[in-house]
Amino acid sequence: MILIVVFVGAAFTLNRLRHTRTESPPPVTKQEKAIAKPSTQSQNETPEQIRSTPYLERYIQDVIVHGSRQHLGFKYGDMPEKMADPALAPKIAAYVVTLSGRKPTHPEWVSEGRLYYTSNCGGCHGEDGKGVHGTFPDLTRDLMLGIEKRLEKAHL
Image (tube, rainbow, N blue to C red; front, side, top):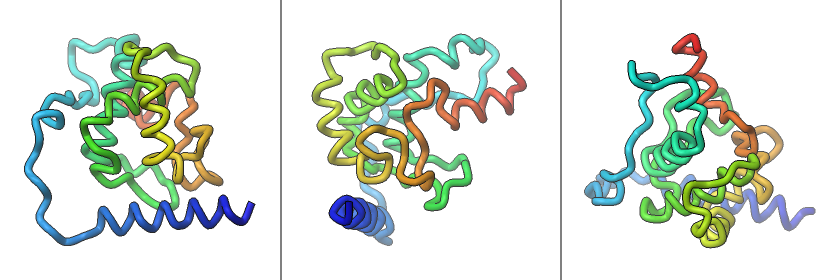
């Protein structure tokens, strides 16, 4: 148990240090530009579309690449940008959607996505995706908290 706590602490500290440097950000890559940001609610999106697996995958990719600025109330705050290589974001997203029992749009990416999730995300969100002692979001929810908040704001 102590090893797990030490590992989680070390992983969190390294990630935090990696993303709090004062260097200028690297240029935006083609992969980052290709990741479409889900809107909070456009006139053409229905609640069913927002609750869909493709929307969830885009949402996860967006948070991995661009970070989260939703102020969801977690102890360690919003997730910084680029917590994983942007090119890996779609594969990580494919794995993460399986944590809530969904079938990803690219099931062939799940195995590889799990590997990347474990090495990039598991330290904070836990191997099972349930978060670590409530300090990081639970990724096993059918409707992730950030999407739930978007729906609430849109009164859907």
